[in-house]
Amino acid sequence: MSWWRSLRARLVLSHVLVALASGVVTVVVVRLVALQRWDQATRMGGPGHMGGQVRARASMADVRGEFVASVDRAVLTGVLVGLVVALLLGAAAARRTARPLEQLRAATHQLSSGRYDVDVPHLETVELADLGSDVRELGDRLARTEARRARLIGEVAHEMRTPLTVTRGYAEAMIDGVMPADEAGLRTVVDQTRRLERLAEDLSSLSRAEEGRLEVRRVRADLVETVVTALTAVQDEAAARDLSVELSAPPRLEVAHDPDRIAQVVTNLLTNALRASGDGGRVEVVVSGPGAGATTGPPLPVTVEVVDHGVGLRPGEEAMVFERFYRGEGRAGDGGSGIGLTIARALVRAHGGDLVARSEGPGRGSRFTVTLPAR
Image (cartoon, rainbow, N blue to C red; front, side, top):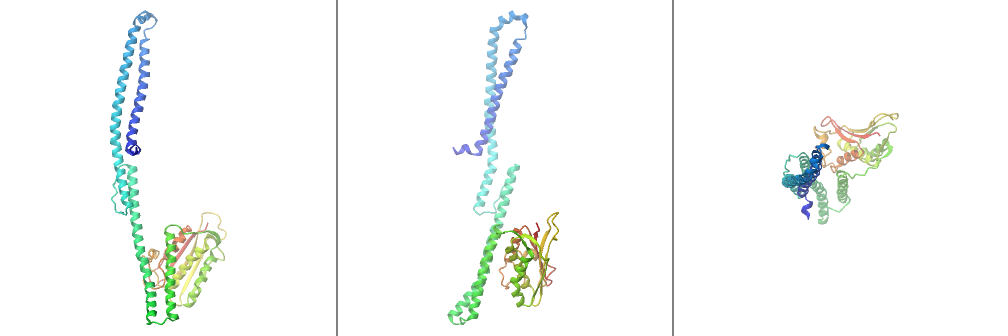
């Protein structure tokens, strides 16, 4: 019974039903029109020919019956021939339509098996051609996703290898008596363990970001206060390196945002700026947006810029710094996980904004700009 639910059977059945309906309509119309015209022709003699009509009534009834029978036979023959032709044409149409669908089905089956380089046929029918294009695009996206997944596994393994190697080396040295189990050695082990913890937390945030599951709870709050919170979090590090962090902002700027998330973004940008700056350098934070009276017209953006005067970015790095585990030249040992900027941009985009980087070149500093919708 499953064959009757297939596309082939339904296409054939549709052709047969159309032919059968056409035949029934033809029979009804021919019977009504032909007999009406016959009866009109037999009454055209008028009153003067009443006697002749009476004498010919019997013979006319016989002729009428034969006429009706011949019409029925002709129509029935036409209907049968039409059904046979419809059946053949329906089978041919079903075969022509079902074959590319079966090819697409085979291609999607290979995609589900992990073969993303499958050759999807180019079809002639517009709708099927669009479907084939979508299947090809799906295969390309799955291939890119799989490549990113494999690369991510390798990158995570590489990032974990260094702290694990250091921790194991210190632990074995202490066990063998080569190194005393003093505060300095244990502090190194603790620092490497914390690095692994930060990496695990960053990977969890990255996973949620790439799956679109970052939780953002926007409320109407003062963006300047949020930025000040981030500044407070890096003050100790800045003071230890004699770095000055200067804030330029209006007294208050009400913006719908998640204070915790935006503070996380600004803290990440400030941390990177401090690491990129030399001792005794300067980092600037500029908050700008529409004035207090800007309540009409289209929404204007609010920006938070973090500017450093340190190592800068090479041409092309403005986009690469947001890739996972990317580190610029000379940044391999700075203690970061390499995915902070990736998470920061995902958080800003979850607010409906964007995070971009600009630099005039190596040694000329960099500028990271967070853009948020004002309303």
